[in-house]
Image (cartoon, rainbow, N blue to C red):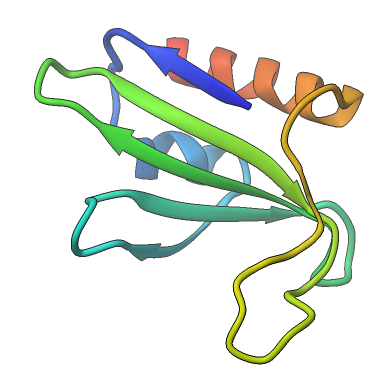
Length: 101
């Protein structure tokens, strides 16, 4: 699920930390920031976000749910859900509110 913000008032790092997300890494080539938030006490399922900011002060948030760890050695493929999920809709709304403050 993609969420677009024309203008953000705080850094994605600050906003997402306030929402309970942990920073994972920054991709050196794309500049995307990666964050996760566990749903329960186990590592999975978890919400996973990629954020890319633009030069105009906006941001694109790509949100999905990782249902499990990648199954194959050397693979990044996983059981992810990207759309049509009530958990995603609820989380997307919390993210919209967080970025609008």
